Image: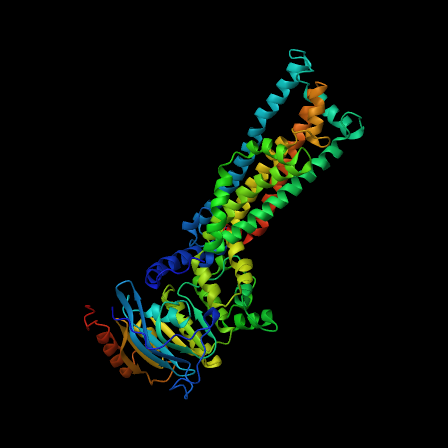
Length: 262
Length: 323
């Protein structure tokens, strides 16, 4: 077993993680600081001594093949996995939009957004958030009557209404059809530019990462094997030469060659 | 919450769950309230296509058929009633043994309108019995639900509560009566206790299973949203278990009425059971039948109330079924 414990995970109740100011390296403000994070399931080491920094307001995409540990890392950052070892500091509030929208089916859309919201007037905040994602007319709807795209937008509103400093997106568009996905990309960019949270988007779609992120990380066997900045202005043209070159490089990193062979 | 599944298994399961949810949400046209149920495969057909119009016709026919069926189902009870009237009206069976329906009706009317020294009034007896049943039922269901929450939410609670409830479940309820008489005498206490135990067990079993079946992913969501324990119970656990809690409530109601009837056979001086035991002394089968019919009506009425509750509490599901 290669599991290493470099430090302790400082975490308060309910998944809130606090920055310890006495720790070295915490002088520059970071939204996320991860050092030596490891997680194993039985004999399988899924996260292997992983380091990660995310600056405030930075949009980071994490790509990797299935089983590379993407979701495990995301769950650790969300405070949903208490069996990780290593240092894990998240500054401020964390929100997450899951792959499946995970709306509570017996609560109307606005009540889903309000759920657990500690604010002076949660209903008004929820209504504003739903307006931002274009669901102003669906606030009283039952979740089971929403389309896939609508449900995912409600889920985004629920995540954003908490004013997170870190927004975790766990492949939230993977189950949507191609057209809805493009609209959702634009929506996420707008919301990100407006609210300025740091974003960690987990995806297996290289084009999605190229369309959205400031920086793309490739996760291989529990470690970040590759990191590259994407400096193109948004909105991005996917046929841009620079992005095409980057795509080829990332696909190569993922182990897919030009003919699509793995 | 049993939410500590390994994340990898989660990663595997979630796309399937997602696609299921997507299928449930369906395309926008699936929201059309005019669309008949059971035609999900045609949901994408445009509204003006002949296929859609044709799809409406069977529904009208079906409701007509259902109404016809309901009418058909009335035939045999009415026939039995007529046969009963005929047999006892013609004196084939002595009317003291089996009074005809008309006599049962007039007995019911006189029991309501006159306060006889032997029976009191029907409504007076009804209130006494109703109170017994209500107190026992409320105590039983509240205790059953609290125990189910304790057992459903924590391993310690489960270890402490569940074995006891499982043992109590196997105990024949009415076998407790002699013991209760020895312990508590023949007052109101043992009767209410019997009803309470009878009501608590089905509710506990259903609510416990319901709580354990609440989607673990919603438990995770509650953690991410930093819900307090109380919010978790109020917004996630209880509503999630509500379908099964209501099933349990209906079963509890059935057992509670049964327990009431049995408990009222033991030495009572008021209530429907008292009316029946008095009538037994005077060989008044018409009074016994009236009291039994009142039990029936009470059972039907309360079941109907729970069904209304069900429809209101589960309206989020109805919108899904209607979609």
